[in-house]
Image (cartoon, rainbow, N blue to C red; front, side):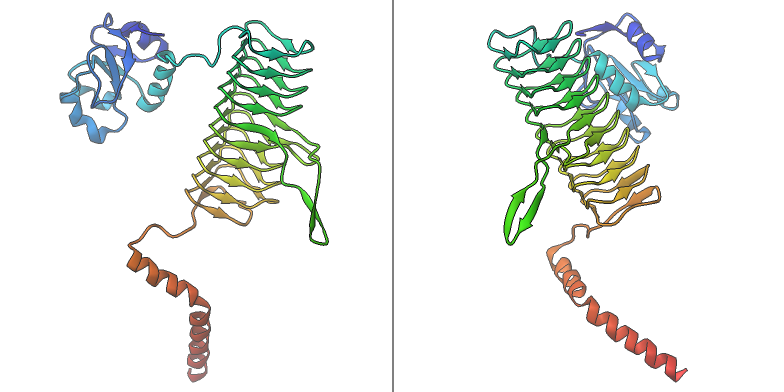
Amino acid sequence: MSSIRLADLAQQLDAELHGDGDIVISGIASMQSATTGQITFLANSRYREQLATIQASAVVLTEADLEWCKTAALVVKNPYLTYARMAQLLDTTPQPAQNIAPSAVIDATAKLGNNVSVGANAVIESGVELGDDVVIGAGCFVGKQTRIGRGSRLWANVTIYHEIQIGQDCLIQSGTVIGADGFGYANDRGNWVKIPQLGTVVIGDRVEIGACTTIDRGALDNTLIGNGVIIDNQCQIAHNVVIGDNTAVAGGVIMAGSLKIGRYCMIGGASVINGHMEICDKVTVTGMGMVMRPITEPGVYSSGIPLQPNKTWRKTAALVMNIDEISKRLKAIERKVGKDD
């Protein structure tokens, strides 16, 4: 949508309109950069003094901040959530593809639903099923017997291996690979013997996957990604990982094989999580967390040492390296004090 009357926008967002409803809104911008014809939002009352100088035609805010506003306003309970929904309404991002490109290679046995688009040089192999309104970007590869649900979109150069299942209304960014072999090998006297990965990847509905992320297929059972999961760029999801509904995974996360993560979890960027264990529902792992043991209670978990000046860090590292010796000396002192008592 390129533009909308403020009154119509208020109605679609279930917001309370204050000011001229005939103002035409053509875009969204930050409070610092917004100009005439644009709408902005105030998500934190600490910045309400900026309302006096904004150039936007309208602002989204809470009832508590309204008295400081000098422009038209949309009053809501959660301005940041409303911003997300407003951005969807005013989104001008083009589709990954339109119509069927002449250079697309589509096997005769593939089944395409209504209004499917396939970009230039994309390859759709035999037995593939694409639901209604599916969009396959330029240069994508969709392997044999894969099924992609209604309304899902793949940006350019996504690789989907054979027999993968992707649900409805998913969004997969460029460079992502889904269904590559998991890291499975047996050792024969120093030589690695490959174990064929016979499972697949099953992805639920409304899943979004960032650029250059890899999700490996299962060894025997399947790798499972639940409904509403969001995964950022450059993540590694190993074979037989299970991620519960509505869990969020930030960029650069590495998950080892046969890990099970519950629902409504949040995994911070660059975290590393061991395999063959379980993390319960509603767990938050802060950035660069190293998770080596199961987590059985909801809550916020952290690990690692925050950034310090190098001189301080060197002292900290020296203490850590000597912690075993320090512990032995402390125990010896405790024993001596106990005897003296």
